Image (cartoon, rainbow, N blue to C red; front, side, top):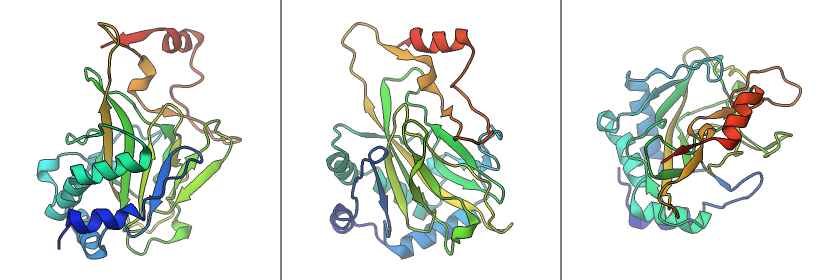
Length: 261
C-alpha cells in the first residue's frame, strides 16, 4: 500500500471543492485509496489504546488517543501524508491560506471513537493553545466506518453562524473526509445520540492545522474564551451550553479581559 504524494495529491486537486455555506469547508468522498483506509480501519478496531475524553455532558462516550509514536503503521502513514508539505500546499490553495503548520502533537486530535448513545454537542473549537504563538485555522476529519447506516445517525452537522439551522450534514462513512476552517462561530458536531449497534463504534482520524500569529506590539492579547471549546444550544432544544450566556461578570471578562502572550 502506497500513499504516493505525486499520484494522490493531483487526484485530490479535483476532489477538494470548497464551499462557503455556512463557512469554508470541503466534504470529500473517496479521499484516499480504499485499501489503505480499510487497513487503517482494521488497525483502529484492533488497537485498544483510546481513553475516555471526559466532559460527558457535551461528548458522551467519546474516547481518544493522541500519541503519534504509538499509532498503528497505516494510520501513521495517513497522518504523515495529511501533514506532508505537498498536501498542506494543496489545502493552502483551496482555502486561500498561507504558511499552514501541521500539529504533530495531535493535541485534541488523533484517533476519536464514540459508542451507541454517544454524541458531540454543537460547538466551536478552541483556537489557541496556551503559551503558544500559533492559531488554529483548519480541521480535517477522516471517517473509518465501513457499512455505516444512515439511520444510525452520527452525521457531522455544520451550523450557520447564528445557530438557526444545519447547513451541511456529512455521514461518517468510510473514506469520507471533511475539512473546515476554525473560527469563533464555526459551529459543528453530531448532537443526537447515535443508534448504531452495541459492537459498532463511530471512528475517525482528526487532524488540526495552525498558523503563526504575528504581533504588531511587544505583547499580544487574546480573549480568554478562545482557549476552550464553546458549546451552544440548538433552537427549541433543551441542552447544555458552555462559554455562552454566562453570568454578567464572566461575559464582561471574556469580552474585555484578555490573556497576554
